[in-house]
Each structure stands twice: as C-alpha cells, then as structure tokens.
Image 1: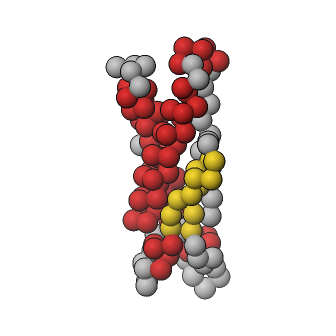
Image 2: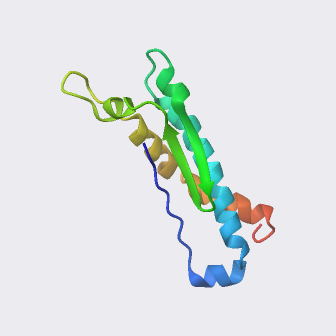
Length: 118
C-alpha cells in the first residue's frame, strides 16, 4: 500500500520563505502521514485486528514519508474479490486527508511556528 502526497509551491514563495521551506514541508508531511496512519487504522476493517495493527509509517528520507501496511491482504479488503465486497478504507483515508485539507493546515501550522506568518 502506498499513498503519495505532492507538495508544490511557487518560486516567489520559495524566495520569501527561503531554504526553510524544505524543512517546513517535510515536517508538515510527517504530521499528515501520522494523521493518515491514525485515520487509516480507524477505517480499516476489523476481524482479528491484524490489519489495523500492521498499518504504520516510514520516513526513509527528506521529502519522503510512507503509509505502510504489513499484511498483503489489505489489497483484497480495499478492492474486494469475487467472493468479497470491497471495503475501500485507504480511499476513505485519502478522502479525509484531502477533504479536511490536512496538508495545507499542517504547512500553515509550521509557517506560524517558524514565525513566517501569523
């Protein structure tokens, strides 16, 4: 399972904010993925709890944060099979992240924290 969030900002914004923007965006992205982890665990179907417990995060490098799932059958829950209806818990998670605009909220929080905006 993977979820990609791309953050883009204008060249003017980069000039105003300076080199801190990469650090700010990275920290904001980490926060979003932690929130996505929590949402995804809540949305995941529960039979034994193994699927929920296998959901986590990974941060291998600057600008890269991953929502992970340690069991392969997450795919069958998400998309269904001929014998089982889909339970699109990953799609619901993505909709909540974008619907609540968590990326923008976290970037704004980081800009306030850095004293760039009020």
